[in-house]
Length: 190
Image 1 (cartoon, rainbow, N blue to C red):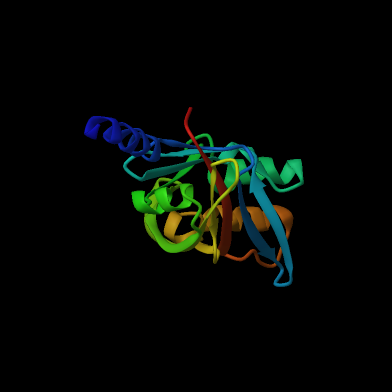
Image 2: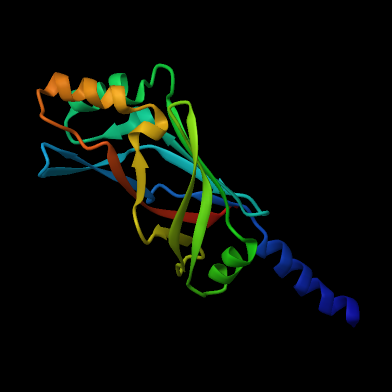
C-alpha cells in the first residue's frame, strides 16, 4: 500500500521538473528615440529559448530578424549596429528558481527579480529585471518584464554603430539607452 502511495508522488515530482520551451507567441520589443521626440517600437521575429528542469533559462535572440517596420532600416541595423556578420545572436542566461516554475504550474502567479547575463555584440553585462510569472490554462507559463531593461549602447560597444546610423539617416541624435521589454511564454516540453 505504501508503495502505491509513492507512485503518484514520484510521477508528480517528475512532471513538475519538466523542461520548458519558448513558444512562438513570445515577444521581445525595444524602443528607439531619435531627434529627441520621435520614439518607435521594434521587435525581433525570431527568438528561441528554454528553461531546464534545474531552472537554467536561456533566451536566444536572432539579431538578423530585427523588424523595425522599414526593411532598409532593418538591413542598416543588421550591418552597422549589430554587425550580424560577426555577431548574429544575443543571449540572456538566468536561473529561475525551480519552485517559481512549479508554483506557476500549480496556478500561482508571483513576482521575482530575475538576475542574469546579457551577451550582446561580443560583450556581456549582469542584468536584473523584475518579472511577473503567470500560469495559463493550457499549462504554459508566461514570464513578463514588469519594467523595461535599460540597455546602454556603451556597455556593448554599440555607440559607433549608432553614430553611423545617425549619419546615414542625417539625424541630430539617436538615444544610446534603449528600453527592452518582453513577454515570454514557456510550455512544458513534450
